[in-house]
Image (cartoon, rainbow, N blue to C red; front, side):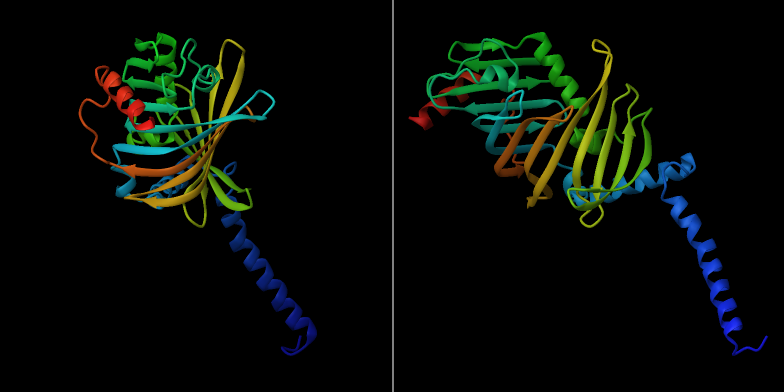
Length: 298
């Protein structure tokens, strides 16, 4: 066969194609979570988590211990229709302290469906405060300061175990965690990679990491519901990231439960590590704070 003949050039082209295919196949397989070895999948998952933390601010994100945000919360009915808005101030001390001040207009019973607490009503000027501190909790409304029911506190503690910020900041070295790569995907027209984290109590976190920004696009937390014999999926969608102090913060957050939209948060402002007074999360501070809010709204 002559070196300049068509057959020679065709043979060279076929050889190059075969060589390229042999080189490319392992690369494709390596990115398929179903064909990866467990240690490869874990390594890929851990790298995605490192990328995610870096995309959220690195040490500036992981070292956040306090946050203060204000905004509006939209509430949706069982059919997904919008039923109202309410303003709030949200104070957090991670991992297990939260103080949420709801500010409304006049007498309103939206709190029952909004936060799942029966019997609460807006105080004069439209104020209700819920405060959680570890295994204790209180509320402030027009009746004064009251102990929160045990079910509300246990629900809050479970929410903190499902909280993605707590996962990324405090739990990644926790014994019993299983980390794996969940594959690539397109979510909301964005290219993402999924990383899956399962804790020792069976909670499964699926985190969609944006390939471009390395920020969190959405999180799906799956938990078993023994009473109804089903798996519940709680999805949080993060948009409109802005740099607030040391961390990139989503200024709009939407939540879904088993595919049904349940809440949406529009943040006006957020601060990281503002330096709260020591008694902000104490029972004694509720009456004082309630009086201050009433005074401001007059």
